[in-house]
Amino acid sequence: MGLTSSEASFTFRLNGSTVTVRAPPAETLLRVLRERLGVRSVKPGCETGECGACTVLLDGAPVTSCTVLISQVEGRDVVTLEGLSGDPLMRYLQDAFVEEGAVQCGYCTPGFLVTAYAFARDSRPSGTRPSDDEIAEAISGNICRCGAYPRIVAAVRRALEVAT
Image 1 (cartoon, rainbow, N blue to C red):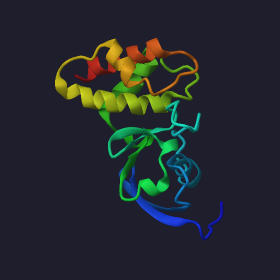
Image 2 (cartoon, rainbow, N blue to C red):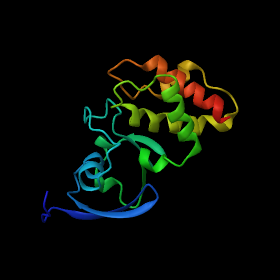
Image 3 (cartoon, one colour):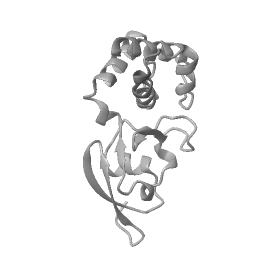
Image 4 (tube, rainbow, N blue to C red):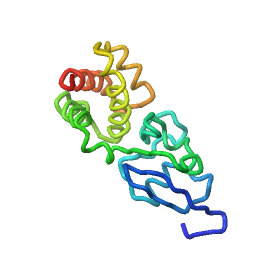
């Protein structure tokens, strides 16, 4: 992973801090976060954007980091689970995941939490409580190989009840 002439410098905000990293422009954000910046909550899964294990927030929206090139994040804002650790809404979600038994093997949990966070953050101002079907739809881009979906939906519902 040494520097080569095909690498370039990219600067973006990661969890509130400006970072600059050298990488090939076609390297994925997933690989840069894990291998160059040491962010471990972002998990490699399918690496085709289907499983959601590598979900991060890009300018506030959940994206699979395996489908985003590092050249696409220049000047943008990337937030991982680590960057949400101080947010009360994330604390509610984490507590609810534990209380509802939504954490099985745990591999998919960071991606689910980031996705659920974005959904909960965006649904709270409306004043209405989303249905279980709406919650399931919101997390449908994430795969839990252990099959904890009912517990994950219950955890998101519980977190929304506590947070409002």
